[in-house]
Amino acid sequence: MLHILYIIAITAEAMTAALSAGRRDMDWVGVCIIAWITALGGGTIRNVLFGHYPMAWVEHPDYLLITAGAALFAALIASVMSRLRKLFLYLDALGLVVFTIIGCQIAQEIHLPLIIVVFSGMITGCAGGVMRDVLCNDIPLLLRKEIYATASIATGIIYVAIAHWYGPTNIAIFAAAAIGLAIRLLSIRYGWHMPKFVYRDEHGEGH
Image (cartoon, rainbow, N blue to C red; front, top):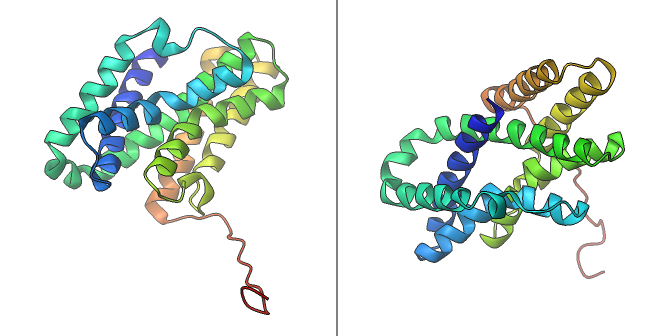
């Protein structure tokens, strides 16, 4: 079940990434690259940091075809996708929790400390979007006031707490996904935000 959700998630992430590439007037190669980075970049960074090989897209090259195909299809139906913005926000939220849980599981498999397991989940869930935003010259969503990384961290903590102290992995996956998804979707629905740190030099810039 988690694998099916993963395929849905990388497809949705690739499609939304295509729109980001289109806003920056990229050609079809740029569209595919942004899609790959968004959908598969978080897991790639995690694996590089923790020395966990092979990469998912090396072991399963069809992921590259799925994401590239989804991105190019999104480019063709871009006018329709603008009307489906809410649907893709929800699919993005699903991707966030699925990627987070998978990242936690990978860290568990290589017996990393619990705090690193949660950190691994956050990297997997958020890093692809950060790289997309950087390459598209946008402020990364992770660094803005939206409840995004917070939802990922909450998902990871709940998963780790149940899987480590209670036991059944299926229950941990279900509970973490349900609560993490609820946090993200409710924040979208009601406009919840994290507090902002605002600092202005009273002497002005350059003084």
